[in-house]
Image (cartoon, rainbow, N blue to C red):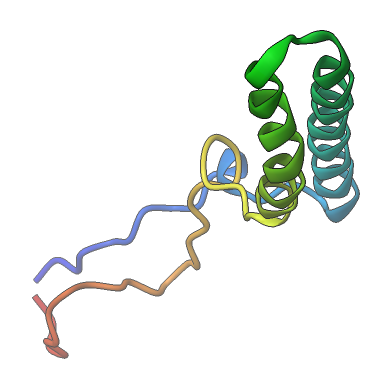
Length: 97
């Protein structure tokens, strides 16, 4: 008798505009590269074999920064985008409830 309604989309579940998303990614990448510069400078200050730690971080950080900058945002705003009238469920039933 009653049809199950899918939840209505909320404005807070809409993804960020492309310009804001690009700025967010650029800021995250710039912060990571700033940390990398600090790691490179630390190589000249840290004594003995401890130099390996900031050196390794300076080598690994660019890869992780690119992966993080290009990863889609999955928390907060844009976490769940629903299409009105479309309901995805685990079952394969096609009848009305």
